[in-house]
Figure 1: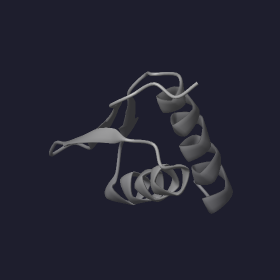
Figure 2: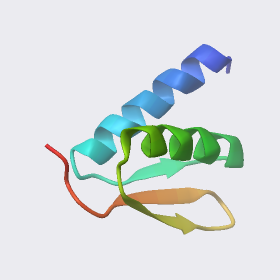
Figure 3: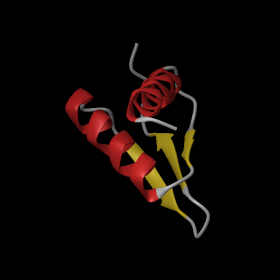
Length: 63
């Protein structure tokens, strides 16, 4: 998987979160990219970190 496709995956996960759905990051690298993007957009999420990956659960729905 190259960097470009990772960015697209992160973008799709951010769109899910914006719609009020949770998103899953399979790796620490993906979680970091997702956290960075969510921070830029100021989207509030709860991050549930497990040994297999991280769940990002929206705290509020932004429309």
